[in-house]
Every structure is written in structure tokens, then in C-alpha cells.
Image (cartoon, rainbow over all chains, first blue to last red):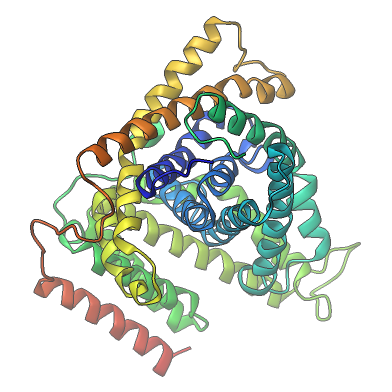
Length: 178
Length: 264
């Protein structure tokens, strides 16, 4: 498998961060798109899958920050917890793709996505319970906000992200994994 | 879509516009600590006065500064009511069904709303008086200590500045792809939620393909010109901090010390 250069990985990360600003704006015509479809998560997860853990972590931290600077969303009150959640998504996705080698791209992608989505939500829940909303954040609230409200976003991520990865491989914009 | 992008930074010549970006970010963090640390009436008075003074010094239209606060009115009401009605179930003013309104709950709700409003105003003032390029340069300078633990801070700053430059390009691309898909029968404006949600699929994949193609071309161009990483690059001019930057820092630190040492 041909590896991408450090410069290309950096530019792909920059593009992913820019998409964290652009995609939510594209989705804003749909009511409650932010909490249901979770558009900012898609570029971060993709960046982690394609570029690795460091760049995924950077995309997760910088994406929501730039989106707040340019569009005001997410609001400053929610920004730190969103940065933590997305940073964990990008980091875990990248780590899982480095560690898992099943010789099947689909399997690697789905395992990485599912593990990062679960761990990201667990870490975000812990951060919210301990730091951002201590005493007001229960297990029921965590389950509702991260899985019940967000299930369309999870489904979209699990369907869309592998499709995008395969489209990019077919267009030879990223190297084949095996 | 482009309307959202245009409004954050407002060109001006106020005292706040002329402060160094690094100082503004550090002062923002200090003032956030000041706001969050407010507990007594006098400390709230200091926090509110400091925020009002900053808004006056920025010479920004109040409607712009309070706009983000206005958009979140429902959130503030919800937070206030949740605290007022559920915070203290042991000493309520009275109880009805699952609701236990209490003095402690009302105080807590008020406190949370005031904290969030003040932090929102402070961050809005920062983004409205500091251009994204200034913010990137300031962040690059402030995260330099992370070099000690091996973080490539120059590369991080380069990535963020390229991301900022890509945003308008990708926005135009998104608009063009949206028009093309509408011409092919995609229904983004459908009233059915499910149809509108699934209509985004033919928008997202072409956006990603286009974005990654641009990334590929840019990286090839950069490598062809000998760019490897940002470590050995230097800046044309380095601007030192001026007296007004130091004065602003000292005032913020002094306010924090007064709050935490003398008042709570």
C-alpha cells in the first residue's frame, strides 16, 4: 500500500477542518439537523480513518473551533464538550485503523467507526458528567441525547463514510488499503 | 449559505481591534475565569461591569453582540426552569407533581444563565474584533510551548490557515453541486423530513470528492515547490506587544485577583 506524504496528510486534514464549517451550513436547511444528523462528525471521522490518529485528533479539535469562529455554531457554551467528543472520534478512528488489519477494507472501516463512535460518546458523557454539567447529567440523559436523538446521525455515518472512502479510493485520491 | 459566513469579523478601529490577538485570547480566558468564579453579588457586579466596559470599548453595534444571546433564548429559559424546578427537592417553596421550585434552584438557574450569557458575549466580542488570520497567528504563538512535548505547532498553524482559506472555495463548490443536483431532480427543499435528510447524500459525496481533489492538487503543487513541513519557515515580521497590550493584560489579571482574593 502506497503511503501518503506528510504534506498530503496535512492538506487533507485542512480540507476536513474546512468541511467541518461547510457541511453544517449545507445541512442547516433541515430542522434540528445539528443534533439529529451530526454533520460535523463526518469529516472528523473521515480524517481519522484516512490520515491517522494525530491528524484525526487535530481535525476534531480545530473543526468545531473554526466553525464557532466563522458561523457561531456550535455555541460557545457547547464548544468545549464538542471539541473533546470530536477529538476522541478522530483519535480513536485513526488508532483503530492502524491496529486493525483484517485484509478487508469494509470490516476495518466498520470496526473503527463503531468503536470510535461508542468510545467518543462515552468520553463525552464522562466529561459532561464531571466537568460541564456536574450533578445534572444522568445515564438516562446520556442515552437519550447520544443514542436516541442522534441515531439518524449514527446510521448516516455508518452508511455514508464507507461510501465516501470507497469513492475516494476509486478516484485514486487516497491509496488502496490492501 | 454565504450569509452566515460574512458576519463574524467586523472591520473597525476600536481599542479592542488594535490589541494583539494573543493578548485578546489570554484576556478572554482570564475573563471567563472571572465570570465563572462569580458567586457573590459584588463579584457578579464586577463581572458584568467588566463585560459592559469591553463591549463599549469594542464600539460594536449592541445588536450584533447580543445577537448570539438572542438566538439561544429558548436554551436559557430551559436551563433556568430545569434548575428552578428540579435543583433542590429537599427545601422547596412548594411542590406539585414532579416540580419542586426552590430559592436555591432559582439562584442556581440565574447563576448558570448569567455565566453562559457573559461568556457568550465575551467570545462574540473576540471573534468580531479579531480576524480569523489574526486568531490563527495568535494560536500558533500561544501553542508554541506544546513543542516541548513533541507537537509540531508550525504544522498545526499551517493546517488551520489552509483550512480557513479553503472555506469560501468549498462553500462555492457546495452551492454549485447543490444546483447541479437540483437540476437532476434532488429535492433539498422538500417538506418531508425523511426526503430532505436523504437528499443530502447526493450532495455530500461529490463535495468530498471535489474537496479531496483540491487537496491532492494543492499538496502536489506544494511538494513540487519544495515544501516539506513548516518547521524551518520564518515569518517576515514579528510584532512585539505594545504598552496597551500589557495594560489590558494587567487590568484583567487585577480584576481576577480582586475577585478571588477579596470577594467571592
